[in-house]
Amino acid sequence: MKIAVTGKGGVGKTSLTALFARIAAGRGNPVLAIDADPNPNLHLALGFPSAPPPLVGMKQLIEERLGSLEGFFRLNPRVDDIPEQFSLMKDGIRLLVMGGIDQGGAGCACPQSAFLRSLLQHVMLERSDWVFIDCEAGLEHLGRATARGADALIVVVEPSRSSMETGLRIRQLAAEIGLSRLYVVGNKVRDPEERGLIEEAMAGMKVLTCLPESAELRRASSRGMQVLDPVLTGAAMGILEEIDAAGIAGRG
Image 1: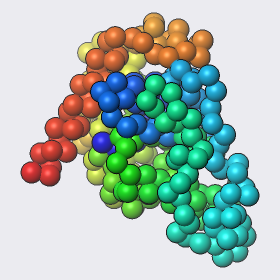
Image 2: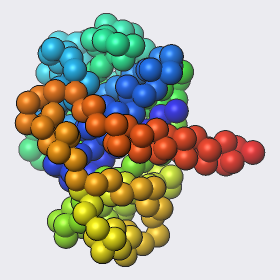
Image 3: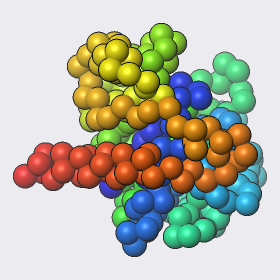
Image 4: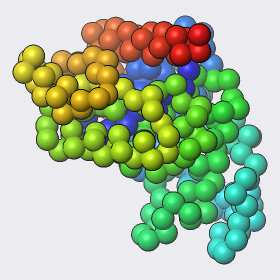
């Protein structure tokens, strides 16, 4: 199973990604968790003492694989050895950090972005791991080829206008790269009225569940600790099972 999780900053996408990874690893699956957010903190939610170095900062490696960091460069660099060489492993979860691209005006054609996109394409289409990607809201590193390998893109939203507007922009970006398997998870939802607001705003996308505001999650986030809330863990299990069932039905 391969899932990308996205949404506006602060909505809980990193915590949900971590829950998915721990559940899958706990069931004996090989798990690759990828932090593709420019402000990487997935390692904290997973309980890693530190994060591996961001790939985007490894200019010598990227230049070696692409042939150049300026002008013409290879669009299909070798990336198959990257997950093992530049990740950290803990509790059956391999963690890889992409890092943010800090080149204003460079656009998606910059060498670093091309390298990271090739890596994601390899991970999504050629590896057998269970892959969970904590994405930024812009879907910077996802492309059409990557989208073909995704079982789902989960958009995490909270009942605020800015969060839901971000969710709608993500839907548009996903459509542009051909990613049609979109789901919504509501978070920090306090009552049926707030769930209704999310369902109305995200019409046309399936709302898998709405999670309540969690004191345990808030405590863990403030202390840089793993999320151990049993309610959220149970909900994450249900999400994975529903996506898996939908994938089986789609292949049948």
